[in-house]
Image (cartoon, rainbow, N blue to C red):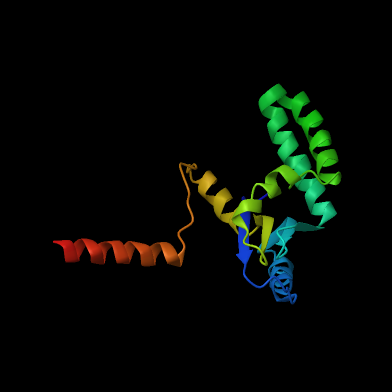
Length: 166
């Protein structure tokens, strides 16, 4: 049983991590709210060199890889494909191929010198029960999006500019 997985990219002006973020993620994990599948920290030095630090829950990564592989396998070859996909997905995850360099380094130009970014695969465990209940009620996914507070501020600013122009 897997919840929705989010690819989350967060930038940091001051790349001195004090452990408070990981402590909060651990608190959420202990309460089965989220599961951190994989995280890569990318630091860009003042000279523009990139440093990569990967932290992962190997068991969670292998389970995630197996699930993704099985789902892809079902699409490619039914039940037999699911079995093959699960094995290959777990092996790929064990080899550290969840967040590969190709997926991380495309951020290199976006990270200012002297700052850092975290790229994480985060499973939303809290959503499993809601998703299953919606499914039992005949509901199905049409679309989704994250609305951030900054988006709402931007909408308000656009509305104010439109009102002022009228």
